[in-house]
Length: 178
Image (cartoon, rainbow, N blue to C red; front, side):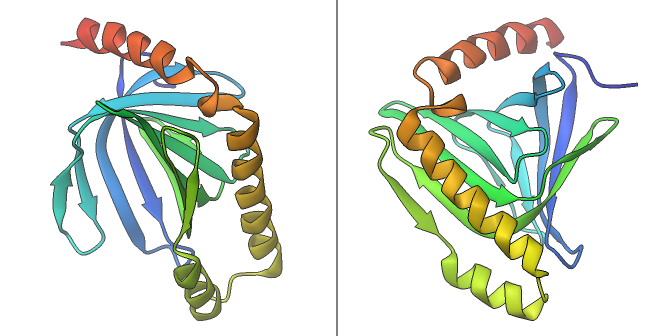
């Protein structure tokens, strides 16, 4: 049975060699369709591969497009919305678990829509260490360009009002569960 809006899901990311990368203990499912899965969380526990645990500091809206090689975490802060875009494999959803392979590259987008590309050295190192197939390298590079195109076009989660709309929905479905 598929999870429904208001239910909690767990998000796990892995590396190409199937080793655990990171776990988000729980996110509230806000919306699911043939095109996208959207979740929200606030001060959720995150566990790193080395066992270190920490909590997120602010509410976030997470967007996973079906078949997309990236996902976005929109962090709602007092001074605006910051985005963290993980370049990774398309996600898989099995029951209450959403998982994907993290391919190292990330894009941090600031409230004014400027951005920084992060972890390029890590991507180069891991692509050699884990022997990323050429099609994966190509998908990762294409996904990076796609994220930057979406940012400049204010498309998807970068669209004005998108995060606010889904955050309001998150507050409604989350409150129903409590």
